[in-house]
Image 1 (cartoon, each protein chain N blue to C red):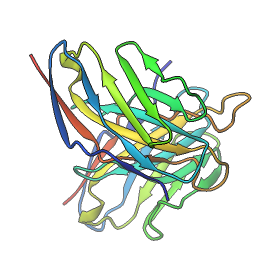
Image 2 (tube, chains in turn blue, green; image 1 turned 135 degrees about the vertical axis):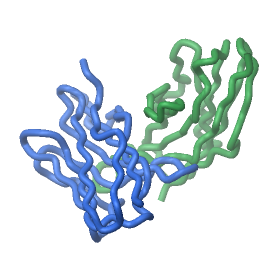
Image 3 (cartoon, each protein chain N blue to C red; image 1 turned 30 degrees about the horizontal axis):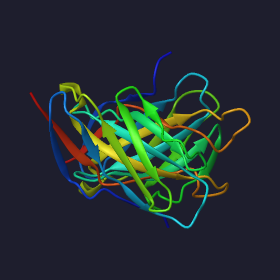
Length: 118
Length: 118
């Protein structure tokens, strides 16, 4: 059973360009979470999605950032008009809803995408 | 809002010895989950162990165990018989047991860098 997959692993963009980060959850997982890790920091929650729905985007900047998880295909985190402050590691996690205990979900992480904005 | 504090930025341990990493958290909730994740140099986030707050028994996974003190809001990780492969950043994380917006996200501490000395 393949784990959470993210691509690309490394992404270099110039200021003003767009960055698209992809995440394929573990097989059978329908919940996806995106986190950002700045240097020397822990991970910070950005957004939580289920298939075709954004459940919680309270951690995502209001401008330039968007996320989707279509019915088919990977989840996409999109950053428009990137700035140097967007340079970070972006992690995707996925989970399955446990039968009988919808709150007891463990999140499994992908390897992350390192975004560098020049 | 919940906060997670890891007061030890760096720790070291001799190979085959035991080390304990500290974590405290602040919450007004009674139902929640606690996790330890490991991030080796590859930067992959790996789940080490999880604890449900309603369980009095401390979780154990092979050489890894926790000391969960709910009243003190403390959740330390003990690594026994340390191995070179245990060298990594270790992050403590909190997840609410409530339903609704904001409850699904993991709140991370800033991490403890563990070095294992041969």
